[in-house]
Amino acid sequence: MTAPADEHKTQHFLRQIIERDLEQQGLAGDRRFAGTPGDAAHHAAAAPDTARIRTRFPPEPNGYLHIGHAKSICLNFGLARDYGGVCHLRFDDTNPEKEEQEYVDAIIEAVRWLGFDWNVGGVSHLFYASDYFDFMYRAAEALITDGLAYVDEQSAEAMRHNRGDFNTPGTDSPFRSRSPAENLARFREMRDGLHADGAMVLRAKIDMASPNINLRDPALYRIKRATHHNTGDRWCIYPMYTYAHPIEDALERITHSICTLEFEDQRPFYDWLLEQLARLGLLAHPLPRQYEFGRLNLTGVMTSKRKLKALVDEGHVQGWDDPRMPTLFGLRRRGYTPESLRAMADATGASKTNAWIDRSVLDIALRDDLESRAPRAMAVLDPLPLVLDNWAEVYGSADHLEACSAPAHPQRDDLPPRRFMLGQRLWIEREDFAELPPKGFFRLFPGNKVRLKYGLIVECTGCDKDAQGAVTAVHARVVPDTRSGTPGADAVKVKGTITWVADADAVPAEVRLFDVLFTEDQPDAGGRDFRDVLNPASRQVVQARLEPGLATAQPEDRVQFERHGYFVADRVDHQPGRPVFNRITPLKDSRGR
Ligand code: ATP
Ligand code: MG
Image 1 (spheres, rainbow, N blue to C red):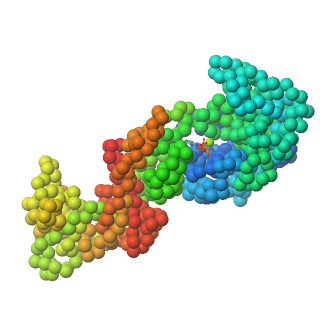
Image 2: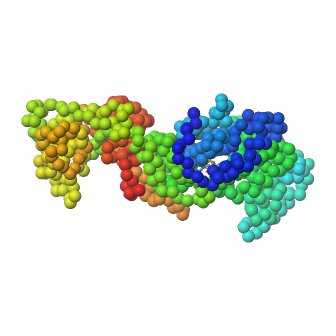
Image 3: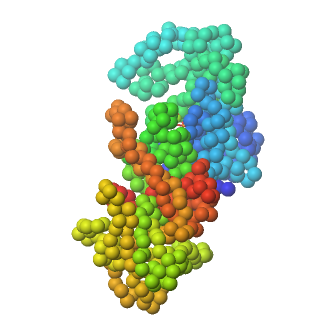
């Protein structure tokens, strides 16, 4: 099921474009769709498209998706959902060298997890660009026959040199004036494997003097002997991305082809190519239009696929799904919810410039999401024993346990209350005791009284220390008749309340505390090696004590540990009886954001 429309919608220029287009009725009116991708003839006899717009998310299956892709997924699928359209999941698998089935599967899983679906009305809209190789070849022959493409046999170096640069117009290739018949024969030889890899390319014949270098006869096809994950060894020529992508959009009847800003200079070629192929009768009108938006850059987050791979390969992280990784698998394992990622994508809108956005947007979205639904629990992350020395006097026996309860969530009446014990021996946070209290410290120090949250008031009497002077246990006395929820509870006023768990029923657990991977906001900016700014403390593991209710937590259960933040039971390592929790985010940003 595609995720429901999230309530809040940030208005942005892409929405304005779509709304304008829908108002003008130019799209739905004469746009036909045969139910599957195809050429002009395929769609000509079909009914008008019932999808009001068509968008697509076109990943290249050469790596794992990251948070930048989440932005693109949410934008494309979200716009289709909001405007009565359909979004296609299209594997842009025209490059045979780097693509693998493993990535195809991982991408499918990640898009589903984010809450989006390409099945609409019982029809799947999952497509592979490599299924269009036959059409792309046919389109290339049509361009050649029409005098709009030629086979260039210059060396790669000569080709680069003759392209010119920003200040210098290009120089025509000596092969540019060959006849269509010669070019066609040569191109067929390329296809039939008669020439070596790199010996020649097919180029569009546009304008070697164009101020836009992308229009100086861009390459359309290259020779490359490589086994393709979908088409095997059928082809030894492969289309270039810039040629393939517009065609993929047109065959699928995409209306709004949304991409990142670096493709802006490619738009004139995108339009040129589709108009020529429509004029030649191969593609149906109306043609797709390309729109560019600024990519998502979050401070402290590196999203280059190559550099993420280096992090994994060099062992700086423990794998692609390491909770510190910005991959969707990493974010999921860390505990971020699909809802929070969608909210982050919406909150960051779409702009026409590449801006850096503070990474706190993601944590803010996560807190917004979990605040209203994650159950609460107490957890002690840095446990120090607290002994209540007068326990037996007050309760008749050192082994006596007092039953306590607390709401599972301040607003959620649907959840039963939490139940746990209070006893003579407890665990508290080491930082909640100070032998010599600094100014403004209201927690445990000799002579001070604090409330044990949901329990009672205790008065600190002192501590035990080891030979090195480290505190090994804190001592206190119960202040009688101060149980939380009893009439006497307010009789004694205290300034501090601390969290705790009882030794009798606490659940020992491994808790993993994550911090930013890099100490710089732009780890790989300006040619800097990101290895130089790795945060050595990005992962810390503590042996914590948790409230007993957490003994039954399931992998991916999320919970707020009171005062510590939001945590998730690790989806890989957590087992009942051997709990492992990850901190998703503290309750507040350490930088105050
Ligand atoms: P590369 O081209 O280096 O392999 P890529 O990140 O462009 O990496 P694709 O698989 O081509 O990978 O990306 C799929 C889609 O996701 C593209 O439309 C791309 O523009 C978009 N995308 C990738 N990174 C971001 C980002 N940081 N913000 C927004 N969209 C992004
Ligand atoms: Mg790309």
